Image 1 (cartoon, each protein chain N blue to C red):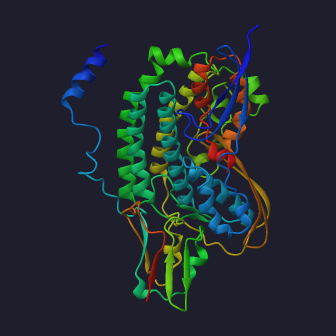
Image 2: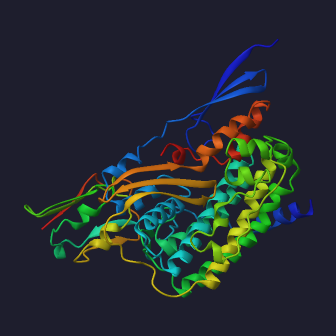
Image 3: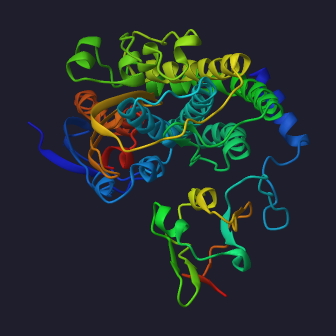
Length: 108
Length: 359
């Protein structure tokens, strides 16, 4: 009983336990796998990322040179980042927005 | 004699996080029989192994379960490593234990919230999940994902945790332990909670043995069956003893999981204290050949993988028997005789994970 009153008075004086979301956003940690991004200028269109992708989310073509990601298929495992020979892929710690386009194409 | 009626419990029901249907044959308010209907979330992941490279499968098996994902990948990788005779570096084994136990803590806290939710204790649900948030932060900081860690791969782990981060994990765990000490009395001592759980859904050790119950359901009846006692990964060096209770009711299952929370925190602390330095990965050459079984202890019990490989990069067969699948027969034994209002509590007490069960 006493414990309950303690808790009531402590909660009356304490700040809310939750964040005031739309105004105060939680930042992702460094190294978090938020979304996949490409630096298309250094891509050599070897197709290694598409070959290793466990979810078939990537497609790469040499002619015309294009790199396409389907964000709805991507499982954010970062396997492609690991196998990229030119290290042009990286994971942005910030998560993608919910209205992401069905396809993200980058071409030279 | 009263009339029998059938109440469909699920697949959409407020207490179920996932779709499971129980057709309850009722006589007034008493359940006399329960018939399960599963298959709402079957995805055919086992068939996918014939199409994908065995290295890619490590990421896909992680998606079998949204709660104990890391341990799925660990079990699969242990099986392939066994087939290919790969020696995993000791540091990788310790890192697997750390991530595996952190996963167990987050799974048990999630379950604790859901159990409270099943008897309408919403406030407790929020408190358990608030504590769990600190654990999810540990996973995001160390591995990059809140639940889907993606760190386990054939030959070791993909990511190391540095000394500074290990220190931070320890500090967060101290905070989690403090929070736990505060909230745990809410289920173990509270009169109303005990009224809803003590003596409800009782099974004996004999029944659990006959029906092949695993994990906390078996441990709550006094069967000390825990795959971590075999010492896979680095458990052999950490002095692990399974936790058992004897009552076999919902309360005993709750107590087993609550005690496992503290035990897992201790295991992570021990693993961090003893972690050796060195490489975290052994290079993999060639393709696996032959067949093997691989087992590990998940938060819900023992998971079983059967792997058959034929020397090509695609596996021939992968069979996964998850702990919830093993616990459904015992659930059907618990339900007859109980009141309709106890069905949510009893069903939640086996910690059902349906996406695991149906793969």
